[in-house]
Amino acid sequence: MNKEQVLNEAEKQKQQIIANRRYLHSHPGTGFDINETFEYVKSELENMGYKPKVCGKSGLVALAGGKKPGKVFLIRGDMDALPIKEEADVSFASSNGCMHACGHDMHTAMLLGAARILKKHEDEIEGTVKLMFQPAEEIFEGSQDMIKDGLLENPKVDGALMIHVMAGMPFPAGTVVVSAPGVSAPAADYFEIKVKGKGCHGSMPNTGIDPLTAAAHILIALQELHARELSMQDQVVLTIGTMNAGTAANVIPDMVTMGGSIRTFDEATREYIKQRMNDIACAIAGAFRAEAEVCFGSGCPTLVNDKELSECVYGYVKELLGESCAFSVAKLHALGGGSSSSKSAGSEDFAYVSQKVPSIMLALAAGQPEKGYKYPQHHPMVKFDEDALDKGSAVYAYTALRWLEEHK
Image (cartoon, rainbow, N blue to C red; front, side, top):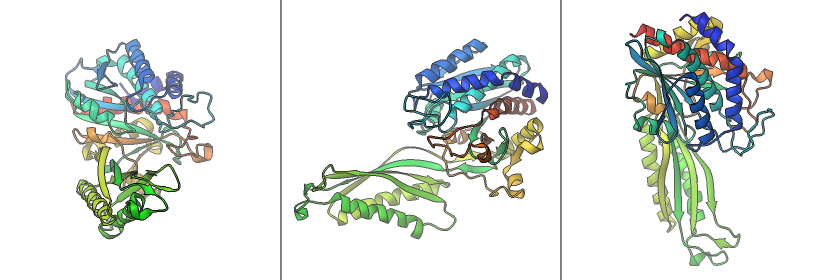
């Protein structure tokens, strides 16, 4: 199957891909609670002739090919939205208080488009393409949940690819940037710090233990980690995003709860930060006669891009889209388009897959600022350019086909 066929077939179904995307956009769910999306994707796959299987709590897996011996290549589309009330001016806006503000509706629709192409040419596939429709990416739990339920086995996956649409990129819709080898997305950890004191009347602070004072000192001290305990090379962001306590202005509360997140590009640094956070919180709380407990919740490791896969996929995307719409990070840097590193500040739970099998992450331009797509991901007014959709479907299908062809 040549590149012209893939592009033509993707373009012919562009309106179908857009329709899929708009339904998904107007019926979002969050985390694992994506029932409408799950049922819609399952029905679409069955209508194409697939036999999708439930994987984990609310993921789906379908297989294309398998009629010829060969390896197995996985392509991922995430399905969950964010708990954000939509303010974007689109006719298909969500009205249920959730929003596809990160473009996962685009990913799912593009993967459905690729599924149609692959099904039509199933006899030609030199091996098997495994389609991964994943929930709960935004909370960093869906990928790991699917892996635990056998995602990477039966048949065993040999390579994997994900695409993420990007709003606000200064490139025509459908332009692809292939990640450089190595880490492209940081590890993420969410945490909660509880500081326990002893409540009392605000006019008599001597009769209690003020957890707010202790919490304030903990918050400031945690920022010293980056300033005084890490080197210039260590890239770390530690953010306290919430601090909640009390209900009355004249009462010192019993408890303060702080919530935040950490982003790190190195596993050793990640563990060091977590240990020092516990040391600092507990010691400072003790100095103010309070007690502290640090709890780490959901998170994900670093996303690692395989060197050989990065080089192969860059070649495939260039074949498919041409030099003007395909960039490696090195080429982008040479043209003055940014850093020679493909590191992003945003974490991605496809990282769990990348820790198990050779993987690659692609960025797909889906909205130029000069064309009105000026809001960033996770903003209630963000919009994505649907002209990227058929290109994304073609990239999903073509990269899988070419990799299997070259690695049989």
